[in-house]
Length: 217
Image (cartoon, rainbow, N blue to C red; front, side):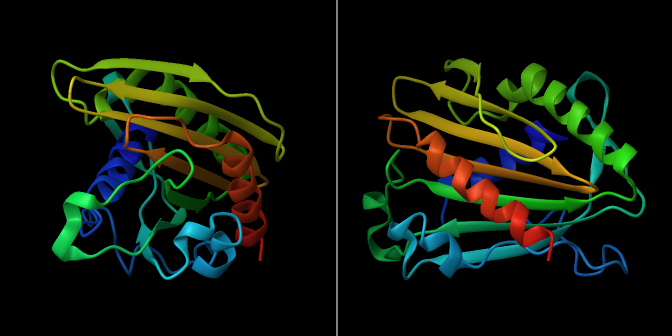
């Protein structure tokens, strides 16, 4: 579940003109998915996003499978994701940079059919990230990989990891936070691609708090 979603998040922010539509569908389910924050709301936390874009997709929700494979479709679950990016000039894409201070941001809000399923989704996601996130890296075959647990307080149930992929040519650092409140599960990834400092955990938590509040309405 999670490391595959993290891979899509990596691709979405690594190549600003590209979003991965394979799991997106405007007719995933009749149930309306939870909302995601507007660009204006996220810009209040990350001012560098002003004038940028928020690309929103509706997605299917899958359980965690065995051996880091995708699990079965969760019937009755609905989800929406948004990738928030600063403005950039397609003519000078080589100058485009995402840093610890000015990261890319990806938010996903999922609504499960029951609290029990939401709890199961959370537990499976944490195990999937811890055991399989290395497969989502963009560092290449000779890159190194590190993961460390992040501590924060939010929602009824939560967990988070900072994931780093490093090679001779590049370093990617991502904060990935998951929070459950009732049947809603919100996940936020903030990502730096410049090889420098990691994105701020307090700001990542602030975006997650905003996403959790938005999903509830």
